[in-house]
Length: 222
Image (cartoon, rainbow, N blue to C red; front, side):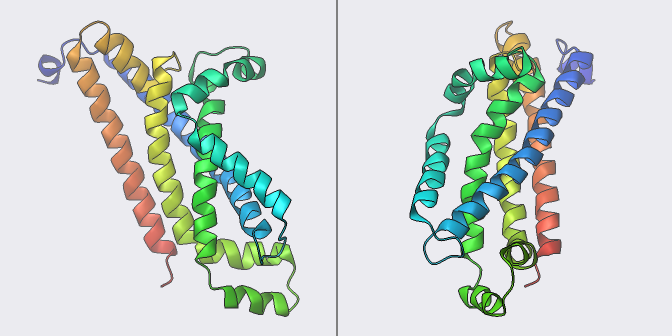
């Protein structure tokens, strides 16, 4: 039945493309979470009236975030081609898409981290500071735990965005479902290949959203 509905689909290629998409999304999401969290915390701590309040550091970090958030992803991929080739020796394949995916998503997530941290009651932060807590203690024992539901929700949104980014990266040869839908589907007029690729992408997105909502609800203490 399924072969009748999708006669042009090579299932071995489809599962390989699915694996590549999941691989790119997973690795880039983990890297984005770590890098974005670091940048977001720096943004928060260097902002006015915070522990490391510094106008210059805040301006530089904020400008970096704003610039890379503003560059369309497909343009960013092209701009990073020399860097990617230097780093990996190639601009094709799933691994070659990772630098652009991470650079494109980390600033976006960093801004979400900043918003989450700003939601924490300033009075609680001041109380902890007045008790002589170290900055590292404030970060690990207060800022991150208190903002965890928002951080998980933010990385869920970012991960879903990264799925879309992998599809765009596929158009220039990064592999994955986007590449399969474009090369094997669109360019060869095989509509069923494009449809099946889209269905699997939607399933991946729904699974990410379900996991994100579940973890968010478990970490929300309110």
